[in-house]
Every structure is written in C-alpha cells, then in structure tokens.
Image 1 (cartoon, rainbow, N blue to C red):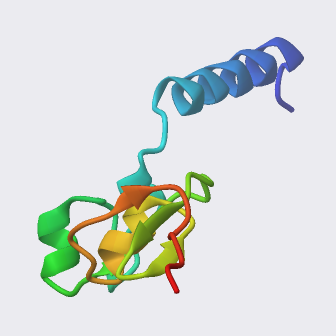
Image 2: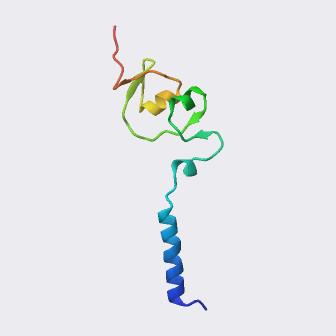
Image 3: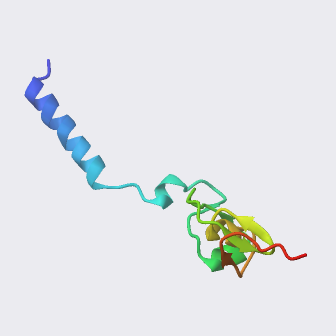
Amino acid sequence: MFHPLLVLLSTAALLQVGLATPLSVRDVAAEPGNVTSDSLEDAEAGRNCFCTMEYAPVCAGNKVYSNKCKAMCAGETEHSLGGCNQSS
C-alpha cells in the first residue's frame, strides 16, 4: 500500500511541473492546418489562422472584422480601427 505522504508529495510534484510548464498557443492549437501566428506573412500565405476572441473591431475591405487578426486571415492587408464609414 502507498504511504499517504508519498502520494501527496508525488501529486504536488506533478502539479508543480504542470504549472511550471505553461501551455503555449502552439501546444493548444497544434492541429494540422492551424497556424498559431497572427503575422501578416502567415495570413498572406493563405494558411488557416488562430485568432483570439478579442473584440477590437477593424474595417478592412469595407467589411467590419472583430479584430485585426481576423481581417488579416481573410486576406485583408490594410485596415482602420473601428467600424466602416458608409458613404452614400
């Protein structure tokens, strides 16, 4: 039978190692086809992108995107902050 103190120390050591080694975005989204960078080069290469859910709207190509990463993933290279101005 296991000694309770040994079990407790082993569990604490495993938890500490798990907490000391944070998962990176690359670890979480390392599925085939996912790109974990929001760089313009990745977006221009036509790769799938991994964007945060941050809401910081931008206007690109006369369309509003929830953030600049999503605009870049859609192939937009230029954007302005906020919504798009509708001129008549």
